[in-house]
Length: 333
Ligand code: TXA
Ligand code: MG
Image (cartoon, rainbow, N blue to C red; front, side):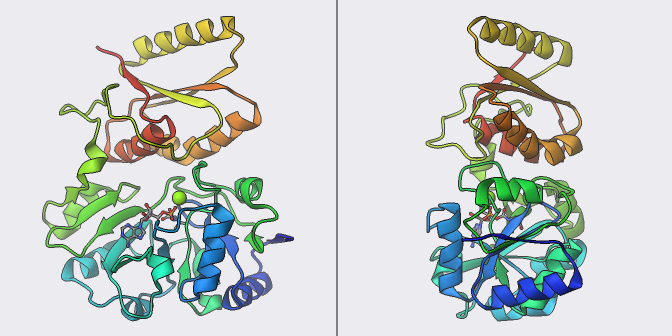
């Protein structure tokens, strides 16, 4: 298959919209990460996305819309909390999980009774969804298990020859995927942390919400992650290199990293260090693309230093832990 590179002109957006209507799969920029889009109501097209990614079929997709009016076709009810969150954060990096309507096929929701919906703030993304005239199912546009793509070049690295087209848009501003919030229960629950944080949501709802308990696994009371965190069966966001996270006071942590690097070098192992300090914005924006850059340099071990204590830092640490298979060392004060 030849993958068309489309610069985001009006003409090309129209062409890409037609492609989506005709069952083709097209990657496009969003403010979070690049998505791989298909008509969410077309089972065959959604299957093609799973195939291109090599993604397990029980992992549900987020349905992207360009206008809030599209939502009522996709869901069976819109809880009051959802309306408040939509008014506050859409368009933007927030995905809401609703009870689904009949028209959403099983393949899109992974067989669940719920559907995840999001309206991206990226103008190109919304123009494309509008041009398609259909809700667009879009997982991150990477091979399953690899770091999410934050540039069109990252998408091509994984997907060239596997998908119909890529919109060659700008680099993503946030760099980690949207916050996913289940609004079907009495108390909304964050299933995946992102740029829209727990405290931002609590502020607009004027009430306390919860985290999916599995997000807190490996995290102790004072906000540090312990190395004894249970291992995960497989890695997500994984580069070819082994990833090791070091967290704690800066000077001590960096000297530990330098010591580890010296030892690795003596064994002829090629290493790199990603140092984000306490800058959670930069960590979010750069982490996935830095992992990909390390792969291109044939790095074998990546040491990550991150020490942000804010909410966004928590969201980025969620990605870091998965990419490291929960290999983290917390340096004591
Ligand atoms: O920022 C994003 O959300 C990006 C861009 C492209 O919009 N998309 C994205 O999609 O990250 P994906 O497929 O890589 O991740 C979707 C996440 C998965 O963790 C999936 O399990 C969850 O959303 N999800 C989707 N539908 C769900 C549902 N009905 N209930 C619970 N979780 C759901
Ligand atoms: Mg993904």
